[in-house]
Image 1 (cartoon, rainbow, N blue to C red):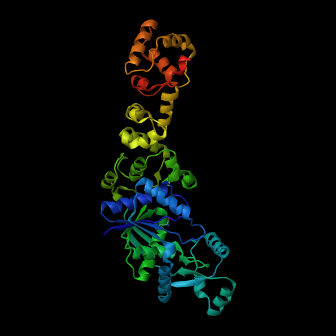
Image 2: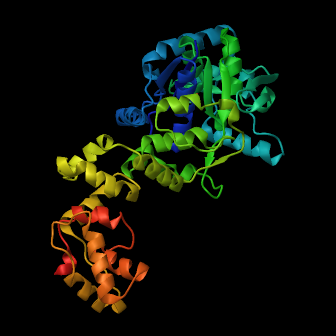
Image 3: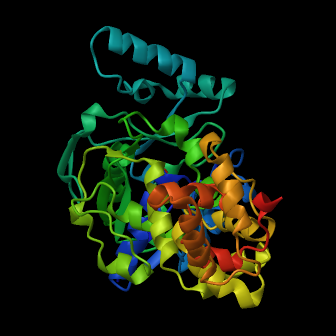
Length: 440
Ligand code: GLU
């Protein structure tokens, strides 16, 4: 059975970049009738916060990305210690004592000499006496001893990958303060949980190389790996600094609809065009990992709004009832109001503005040249309540009295009644208008 996982660290809220990872793993699992696990990578006790874990779940629920199982790394620390012991037994784990400053200095020296900044394994050359002396000063951290051969895998997106382990530093798996790091925890989890496919961002390619070796050292089989491209801003600029403003909770707040967001993300960076899906199953059916490419993918949040509008325009009134109730549209007017307003909204909250126009009217907008024309026209305005015929009755009468026609006739009247140049069909809108401020 296909088993995938989405493994965010609860050290912040989810943003569009994370969403891509979550969605791909979710779709792969659903497409094959497999299992999708939500795994919270919370081995960092200082930075992991319950409110972020809750936020992550809330975001996924909002999107309908339901998980079949949830796991937390902080409750599995014993398993990681067991794996660490096994690596020690197999002589693939060694204690090192360099401080971050010392490591930094080493890296700078290497770079100055034109060498790659790979950890020099000085710790392997320490005698027991030297180690004891260092241990009395500071706790040691633990590194995995890479086998300096090439690490190869066939990546689900990038194709054949080959990384020279000699160009990679032996990864630190346990910090000096005893904190188990993600690289080890993830390997143990992926194996224990029977993960068959790991899709994550291409910033994890080097991790994958080392994790493949750690798995081998522990006698585990590696899952299938795929690394999707990272998102950039619309101009190709790094998105990392802006990700804070691209949190899913902010997009939700701004009215982006889940299916619009998912439809966009399921195709962004793929060879096939974005297509608005209204049901999750359509996304599942239309998803194919092999359609995605390696180059960075441009993301423009503005693209989410036309898709949201398109999604909303076709919704039946039953799907917007909550919003209509919230803004106070009476039950018996909901359907009519929705049919009048829906083509004129981008996000659901725009409905409030149209309802306010209906119930409170709008400040008239009258061009200087039209002052007299509008004043005369208002004298011909039919009595309220308006009917679906009111607009044509009124405009015909004004046309006859003024001789105006076309845009010169209709636009000043629309602006006088609604304060805007655009909006719903006036003959449908008028019966909903309860107040006309232009009449004074
Ligand atoms: N917690 C890791 C991250 O958020 C998970 C990476 C992975 O999918 O293995 O980057």
